[in-house]
Image (cartoon, rainbow over all chains, first blue to last red; front, side):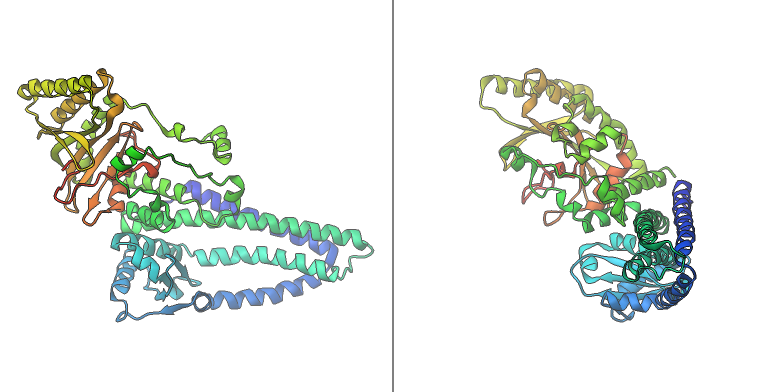
Length: 294
Length: 201
């Protein structure tokens, strides 16, 4: 199996990006009607901030997460795995960092493939076996390969601008030189920007979920073992805890009564950055079957 | 998932009964193609043994049922070559253990045994049918739960651990071929005793 494009996924990603841009353009147009040129200055200043954030993203993120870059002597196995997987994914080897935390987690950061870093928590290394850890590392490397950091930075840049304007409009009444539109005009501007911010926020969340699916596919392509990533996800999310430890014969005696958890509804789905473990595992199961077909 | 299902899920109305199927001994025949898939796709070899787990009842008619199961298996031994024994475990459950190097015959014998219990009105005493496999990573079992009418994988490792990655791979590969238990809350282990290797020992 190679990096087959999931066209449905691509199309949805493209559409989300497109909507985001369209939204932004419409919004900028609407704002400039009310506020005149000062917006441009503001956007430039903010753009400067974003650029700094963008260029130093790897170091900034690592520091903010309390991650220490580690040498190959300290963590030979981790380095070995990342080297092997990077080679498989045709990537330069990223920086390797470890976070001292019991929560099993991992992330990748960096503005491009050359300046990437992959960080894992000590809890993750403790929880997962070798194959499962490879799956998670491959997932993070797929993020690097897909340049997700850049995509998400651009996307959130747009929504943050909208957000800033909401605040700005609210505090300063919008320095309105748009000529005699008065308070009502400002109210409209604020309402519009609020609306824009909410919509763009949801779009970014959706985009982020698509990137996760993509990275799962990428990980499957790198390791050739979707099942290991799936069981890693189940372990990390605590779904594995659902698999009973008690013998069937003991349970049958007790005739246990089970409470089925209420699944979060559509509202929860719109706001989440990651797809539910269930849907990701479902997708990985399909990949596993595709691979078995060879 | 349809809109109505979605609504029911949101409202938390997907009750346990939803996931349940009535057990049907014919489900056991699903295992015959599974043996081939397990071998060709996953390199799991048949351990040439399977077993039926049931709980006893202290009544004359139940003992008659067990006697008839034994008689049928004894008669079938000629034809299928399936060796069998009836044992009990530390949990107080009873097992019909079947050995045959031909999976088809093994399944047929298992089906005969299960069917006989059901015909005598003791279907509710059947707990599970277990099919054993070997692999270089360790043993694996497909367990058919008569309570739920579904199959799930079980890959026990030493120290009462389970190889969840292997179990997941089994689930993914056999999905569509077997009625698989989707709710992992029901993937009950059947641990072997201290001295045994298989669940019935």
